Length: 288
Image (cartoon, rainbow, N blue to C red; front, side, top):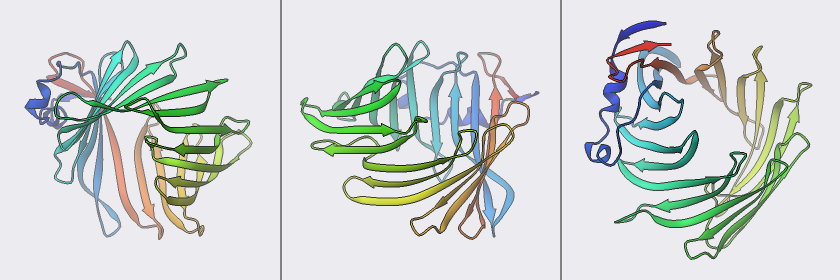
């Protein structure tokens, strides 16, 4: 590992609005993962790049902050996570530097989420929009039920699986609220290789209120049993895009993603940098 002087990474963290910083206690920063995007010109990667996202972890490995940069390279949107021990307790989502909504979690003894409260920003404290409960059977989610702020039924979803635990059907009855992902119906037809890995899935998804999408995704795998390529096809079986995933050989962490369009032209190339801050003053960093 290489030790270098503190540079851009934590300087960007300091750009978060001072108003918002005052509402939160200082957080321990031990590790930072910086995702950057290369500038693409004429289908070729250039040497220019800019940060698009940061994931900030404490000494216990908990990701307490996510920062997303806009096209002007400013940290406009971000997420604050709260924990109870190592369990995620709540997440605050900021859009355009203002709190947009909050998700609070309850979990069972197996650390599965059994209830979330979806609160939206208001003039004072975040106001309850809906409560969503989750029911499991043999470790698989079978029912999702939402209630609005008055306690009335918002929606109810039923989930079905194949013998490998892949969700193959979801049907949602909507009344007063919709699921967080806006899906009201889903069918999925998976195909597996001899090792039980998904090599393709054809999905038909209906989003609220009436947008319907049919698509097929195909996967290949590398020698460390991780996804090597992912290719998306539309309903007419025409290629939409393809992604190539590149992993670090020493620890097998995902490091780069290359995306090409339907014609095979490079349109995006992202890379991840892994930083370690060994001391609380964060004067130095180590590139892992």
